[in-house]
Length: 386
Image (cartoon, rainbow, N blue to C red; front, side, top):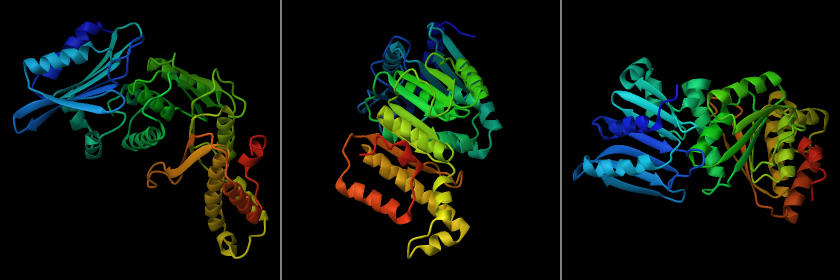
């Protein structure tokens, strides 16, 4: 149930000033307001001069750190932070955890938990995880809705780190995002929460072919209070209608040529950034099965398991090459540790608009010609190829 914001912030102030503070984080922004900093973090530190409270703020360009003495100096500093129109506060002490989200109406949604009881209920691995520096705090309200076991948190954190490495410090306002083939959308919501905490005004649309997923994901957005910023449509990747041309396109674990469909739409939209994590690869593998392998590479396709693995590598190599030919800078990186999923490759792309070089064109033609394959993405981008 919503509570008066001024009363909740007074409670937060008491926790910040009381002994036993572990850490506190403020981020995001309230509707219609922009804080002077994108994020603030508070934690106790021990210096040569004694105990201090360290405040680290980030204005989007660089962090700024100051250490204040407990008492009047800290109270004045915290009053300044509490006056900022942050959208979220997360405060942890030795005995309690308080999470605050400011609603559109200016009230506070509050979740309170006893820290000691919560810690006692968690296995050692999860307790260790809380000590890590997560891009999306494990105490974020998102995990109350979608669940938050250790494996899921690791995958979300790996995805967000790839996203953070792709985007610039200064984001478009608004930042328009589409997740093609979003499934149950937990990465869609994670992207929204992270970008929102960075201070971006985000508009997100998730696309999935299943109507029941659209209904389920819309209900989750309503529970999280972000239904006006995060919406879902039922449709195919190729034909789904969006209310905007996106800046950022996500395609995470779309099966086989669905990844190619997502990449083709991203190119046609001239999306600034694209993150694609391919899933199964059948198209090129099926072509290799019927073609004569060029000399001297017979051993790479003679055995089915080797042919399938080589087809995976060839498929994603050709996808990266086609993106480069269409004006993108591409990095192929590990998405998440292979111990968690064998489908752990990520194509991380940024649009530069650069024209392809003669060498790039020749290399692509030679590679496809030598193997006799025609990638699905090439067919889809026929009108866009140079």
